[in-house]
Amino acid sequence: MVLWSILPDRAIGFDMTTHQRDPKLYRDNVGLALFSGAGNVFVGRRINGRGAYQWQMPQGGVDLDEAPADAVLREMEEEIGVSAKFVDVLDQTDDWLYYDFPLALRKRMGGPFLGQRQKWFALRFKGTDSEVRLDKHKPEFDAWRWARLEDVPGLVVPFKRPVYEAVAKQFAPWSDRLAANGANPAPR
Image 1 (cartoon, one colour):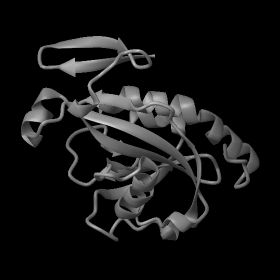
Image 2 (cartoon, one colour; image 1 turned 180 degrees about the horizontal axis):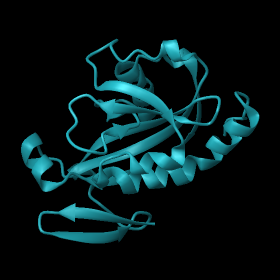
Image 3 (spheres, helix red, strand yellow; image 1 turned 180 degrees about the vertical axis):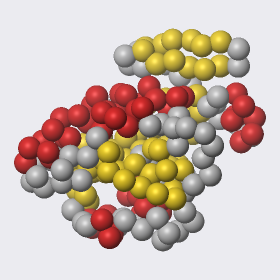
Image 4 (cartoon, rainbow, N blue to C red; image 1 turned 45 degrees about the vertical axis):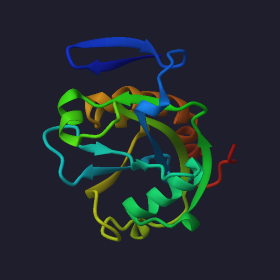
């Protein structure tokens, strides 16, 4: 798969599986594809988003000395109020997936990072919709819904889209299994 990195004055294509980046220049981050029993995934609408493409799956930073598997459960609880007791971990990406921040965003944010490197997890949601609480902590989303996994890359900001396409491709079998088997697919 080829990803496009948007740099200040040009776009450069690179192969996500073979291109090496300096991890120190990217903020460690986790993302979660939270699957419903019907095989759809949670998407939230960014609370202070501008323009189109403001939906995304939950994601967040990995704290110092925190394992990505722990970070994803913490971020899920912080961003959408869902406790770890309501999920099963199904899968995770083998590799870190990278995206660069657009230059204007990087300038606005400040800091040393060119973008983020993400470890993604597929989680099966065993709770009910009432367990989702966007207001449990400082809200990052103002609305949420279940969406088909293959549709999610078209909902996100363009600079994140290649990562979402890779996640959708890797986790598509879980969407299919959940849709076919309800809440009882076998975790990997």
